Amino acid sequence: MKYSILLLIASLFLMTSCGRDEPVSYLVPKEESSAAPSMASASAIQAAPAVSAPKAASGSGFTADLPDGWTEKPGSGMRKISYSIEGTSIDFYLISLSMGDVTSNVNRWRGQVALGDATAEDISKDLETFKVAVHDVNYIEIYNEEGGKGIIAAIVDLAPQYWYFTGKGSVEELKAHASDIRAFLKSIKFDGHNH
Image (cartoon, rainbow, N blue to C red):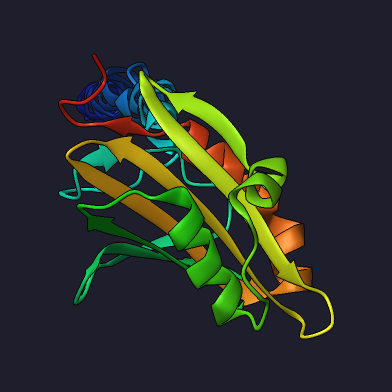
């Protein structure tokens, strides 16, 4: 009887010992959890390029770098596209026309901010001309300091069409955002017009 009790105890000891060794020696969850961060890191690295400089103008015939705080809005009426600039009341938009006379357009904008007409010679002193790809851009900032209103505008020569980027708002806001507007304009790439 003593022999059978000792045999039973030894069997139980062996069974419990064997049961412990098998599952404890392989901790699969630890391996999975150590692999998970590297997969997450890879996902984060892959996602990083998507945070690059936003591009504007889906479906409007061009792309451009959007400055921080700018939001693209769909066009309406004559407007091909509009933008809101965070924290401002600036109304910035694009229209396309078949005329591109600088003097008459600048005088029209001057009238909108309660300034009188200017001569072509006077306008040329305030006009900045630069290229976007191979296209001429006539850029001007018009400020009525006394009235507090202004316009920043650019005429892009895509003859037979001319594209007008126009920003209207307070003198203070326009001056604060003029460099962003200029950088946006200089970053434009027109679909099919960059030859």
